Image (cartoon, rainbow, N blue to C red):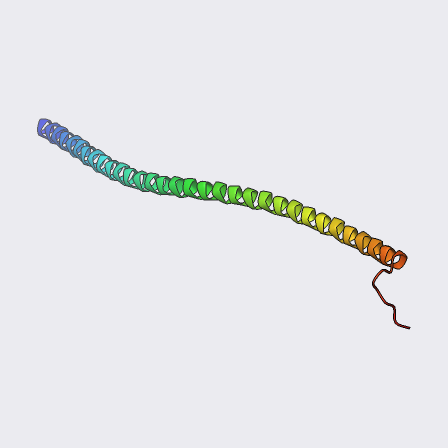
Amino acid sequence: MALNWKLTLLLASVFSAGFFVQSEIVRRRDLRRELDEIRNEQIKVMQQVDSINDAYAAQKLTLIQKTDSLYQQIDEIIQLKTLNAQYIRSIQENINRQRQQIMLDIHDLKETIGQHPVGLQQEN
């Protein structure tokens, strides 16, 4: 009977060990499955992040190109403004020179008329 008791204990411990090993195998399988699910989800998230980064990079490049174009246009406007200001200044100087010449010519004509009143009659 003592042998049966020992045999029963031995069988019970073997079954307990088998149950424990089986539950560890199932637990590891579940953990691997969960880890695979997490990895798959991580891959999906990283693909979305990559897609967002690609779209951002494309939009950033477009914005940089537009900004460069705007700066070029601003530079052209500034150059045209400078040229126009120089042209206007040149015209103003020319007008002033012509005005001075006209004033000198009028003065000379008045002097000439005053000195040579030929054909002109003065009314008293």
